[in-house]
Amino acid sequence: MRVTIENVVDDDTTERFLALYRAAFDPLEGVAAARQSLTDDEFRDEMRLESVLKFIGWDRRERPVAMVVINTDLDSVPWVSPAFWRRRYPEQAERGAIYYFGALLVSPDVRGGPWAHRMLAETVRHTARNHAVAAFDCCQHNVDEVQLPRMIAEVARSLSYVDAEQVDSQAYFAYVTHGLRDEVDLRDEPVPHEQNVSTSAATVATDVTGQ
Image (cartoon, rainbow, N blue to C red; front, side, top):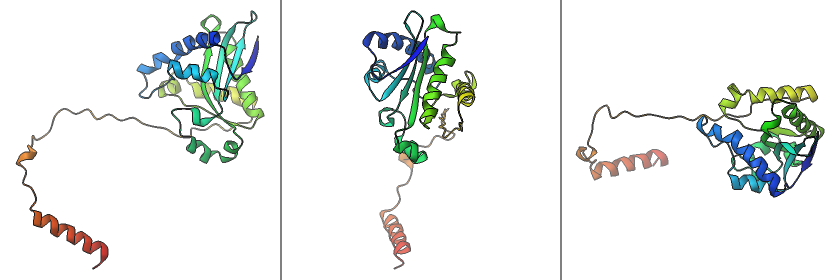
């Protein structure tokens, strides 16, 4: 069992982990209002992008069985505001030390073993060694049901000195209409007299200029 850090991943390994990525993230599309994952082409592009660190776990038979994806260039993360993170963490931003975590993937045949914890531990060590900020986003389902932030915080606190905080939230609202209370045909509404409109405009101009 070993973990390596790669900048570029070959096509075969990319396709292997793309299948794991789709299996992990596609179910979230029905439980979250916002998009939760990269497209297939975006994932393939990240595997070739050198600013994206790929922590790959290899089993005893030298098969790639786990991966953590960390983006070190905020400008290449399509759904975040780089300006927000740079303003909040200017010192780390200046050093290129804001790491945006994209995914933790573990092959089904080794799930239930040590790999998830091992991969998180390796990324925590790398982040803490560089005094960097580890950032990520997740939907409410992953907060409440999976408890992903709590799990990551527990691993991080066991290995490093860390301050964990929720830095922002975004709410989605829906207004379901069921018809009007009073049907009004706007075509029957009287149109304001042109003179009245001009008078009102003149009154506003007088109020603003004081003349």
